Length: 390
Image (cartoon, rainbow, N blue to C red; front, side, top):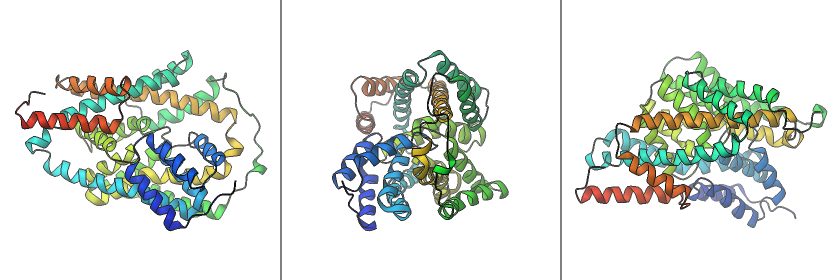
C-alpha cells in the first residue's frame, strides 16, 4: 500500500495532539491507530520501528514517536514532530515546577505530597516486579541485575554500570543467538546528515566538559544520561536519581520523587521530569537545557539507526548486550525503590498510598493518570473536611 504524504503542518498538528493526550503506553496505541489509519506509515514500517527503538539509548516511546515522524516527513518531519510532541508537556511541567518550588509551603498543597510520593513508590514496585519477571528470569540475568543493584549501592556511576553490563552480556549470555557476520558494505550512511545532526550533540558535550557552572554541569549530566540509558522512562530513573540526588545534590530525594509524580500526571514521556530538575537548578533556562540534553541524544540515535537498523538488528553481540543491559536496569530500578522506601519510613501513613497505588495498577489495571487524579482528589477532600493525619 502506498503511503500518503502529509504536509509538515499536518504532521506538526498531529504530533501536537499526540503530545497533549498520550500517556505512557497509551502513546503506542495512539501512534499506531492515528498514523496507520491516515495511511501516513505502513504496518511493516511501524513494526520495524517498534523493534528498532529497543536497541539504542533513550525512552522507547519517544524514540518510536521520532522514528514515525522521520519515516513520514524525513529530517524536517522528525524535528517538527518531536518539537510539537514535547512542547505541551514541557510547558505544563514548567508551570508545575514554578508552582512547586515557589508555593510548596502552602498548607493544602503541601498536604498532597505524601500521597504523591506513596503512589510513586507503589507504581515503581509494580514496574520493578514486572521487569524482574521479564528480564531476570534466569540465573545469569538475575546475577546481572544483582551486580547492577550492588554497584549503584556502592555508588558506582550508572553509566559505567550500563557499559560494563553490555560488555559482560556479550560474553555471558551465550544462549542468545543471532547473526554473526556483518557486512559493512551493505550499510549506506549520509555523512552530511550525520554531521549536521551530531553537531549539536557534540557541541553540548564540549560545552559541558569545558565550561564551568551549574548550567554546563546540568547539560553534561542530561546528555550523558540520555546517551546511555536504555528502555522506558522508568529504567532511566535510576541513572537520573543517582546523578541529580546522590552526586550533584541538586534535588533532595523528596523533590526528586515529587518530580517523578509530575512526570506521570503530565502527558508525554515521563522523562519530562528533566524539565523539573533543570528548573530547580537554573530556572526556565535550566528547564530548556535539561530537556534538550535528555531528549536530543535519543533524537539523534533514532535518525542514525533508522537507516542501518535492518542490517544490525539480528547481530548476536547486539542482542546479548541489550539483554544484559535490561537485566541491569532491573537491579537499578530496585535500588530506586529501596531508596524511596527508606525515605518514606519516616511517614508511616504514606504506605496506605503505596498499597493503594500498587493494588490499583497491578490487580485492578487502573491507569497511572486516573490513579493519581483519584488519589489526589480524595486527599484534597480529606483536607477540606479536616482529616489530615495521612
